[in-house]
Amino acid sequence: MMRHALLYITLVLPVWLGATVPALAVAGDQASPWHAVSLAGAAPAFPVRLVGQEEPWEHVVQDIQARRSPHRAGRALRVGVYGHGAFVTPSEVLHDLPFVAALGTEAALDVMLVPLWRFPDTPPWMSLPPALLQAQRSAGLPRSLEAGVALLRRAAQQVAQAHRAATAQAAVRLAAGLSILHRQQMVPSLAMFSASALVLVRLQELIEQGQVSDGQTPLPVAASGRQGMVMHNVVLFGYPFPNGQVAPALRQRIRGTLVNVVPAHCAQQWQGNFPLRGAVQNLPVSWAPAHADWPRLAPQSPEVAALGALLGGRDPVLANHRDPFPRHGQEGHPIGRHVWEPLCAALQHVDPAGVFRVLD
Image (cartoon, rainbow, N blue to C red; front, side, top):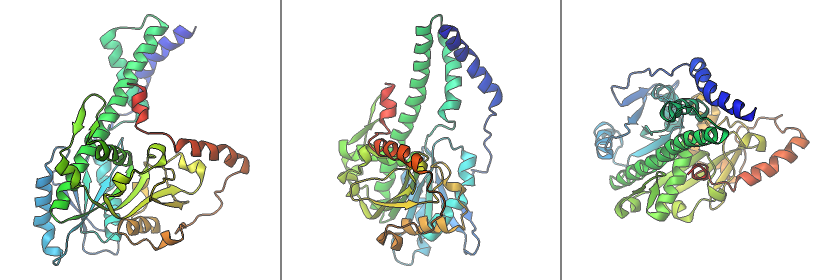
């Protein structure tokens, strides 16, 4: 019976999901990388620039200098880098731009950059069934329970490998971008949400080891590029760091504040981020959405203003480590807290990159 159930899942689930999950259409005009975003009460429009997956950073810097240098009035350009999450299509990135522009406006930045990472467009529960179907076509139908388990494992390995490769490649790209921005006397600040926070974890690995693995091959970065990686003010919300610890090597590359925005209640932390240790300021807030939903915060909301202030280094609320906009009535039942608190404490010791290594 177990064998028949596994064969049914392996054969029918991909077909069922393929029939019920609509294809994600790509919309929006991406002919120009520049987008001027008008916000209520803000004039002029705030500039946001998309950075292509293969676009040389030298070209990006030259483009910024040509458009923004006349506006800086003899000071260094302040550049923000927004890291979007996984499972985000190009059209969804365009929908996120008002949120990105609001962050840049509140942080008093000159321009916001949105690198387009090679993150998967679809979540694992949607990409795994097609991978299973493709594996069936290549290897034939599984004839035993062991063959079905092996098929599931191979398909899961392919999905995990895609995620590991994407974060590693994004870390190398981010390192190159930070280095050239610093060499051109630009001041980069980072807002890394969702899967892009995992990119910063991989960047930490790159700084410590001089290279990062995509799961198959190492991706080295020249020493000159690593030495030029300097960040000014970093706001995190997404995946936990290994053992909840930010390495001193990464912390030394950050000028200003490193703020980790944490859901105030443990049960909600499972939807986003966890407290960190090691020269990090944790800001517990009750209004934190799921880690993939940050762009859904209204651009004119006080929450976005608070995030932008953190990104700009203006952090008076951090002096008392308090929620600038508390929401009440979300404490939860005491019995529930007894369950969640130990789980949240245990998960702080999880290495997010280890999820990929389990399937290696």
